[in-house]
Image (tube, rainbow, N blue to C red; front, side):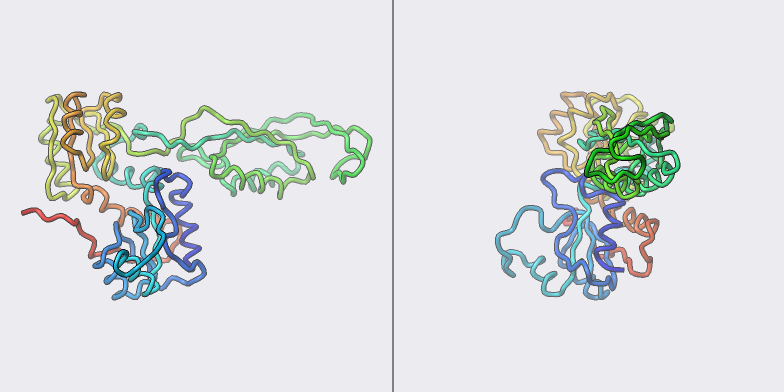
Length: 363
């Protein structure tokens, strides 16, 4: 398996087009045509993780946090020791950061499932647009065109794929001089029994779907429509939902700490009602306080809450369980490992980092 093949798999798991504007998910450093000897999955690239990759003869590290986040004008051993070592050792780097945070079945969904949160919606939806796509096809070619656009990514709604609606009707057209009509004669209006195929397409798949349709369609000038929908995408940062039972705040907080095997948690307590509705943002979610406050949830689980954000939470009447960034995002390793195998990546080329640990020490 080559690096470009696993890159394509990663894009199918969590499309890189979902990433936030500040992010740099995807290729960090790679020769895409090189076969993968071993791929190491880690939360970050550290000197210890790079040593681990070299010891295991891994020529690829897949991380959550990009080593290169902003543009670099120069790379030196002194200023960029980790990146320099990776390049010298030909240890290639791919990143799955905010695209994996936003994606369905991504990091937040994985942690939410661990905590028994039945997801209702993301905390902040992806800005990606959704389009209605319609194309008119001669009846006998409807199945061929449908299959082509489905394979290109059309028809995905939640956990369903290949969704569409077909309407039978009569199409008319008159070929002019210079055309090469599949059906009909130049200068004569033709009537054809056609099927209108309607489906939905995410913005990231739109161009591919249009091209696939044209490749499969018998007409040299297929008639098709594309228009933006107000439908909100199901992908987005964080999630909120409900747990099965109402639990006392301290009891539930201690259970979360144990379930996540977190070294510590900090509770920002604004009220003492029992916990039923829960919001979650793995990693650092202090920027989402306003969105969470509008949901009337009983507890918000996240990390990296600053002193002033904690005061703002109490002002808004929010309970927050502040967990170290590492202790929610460490599950990236197991989550991505499982999905890569589900998507057909050979298990024998994948290893999970055992050297990745929090940069903090509790004294």
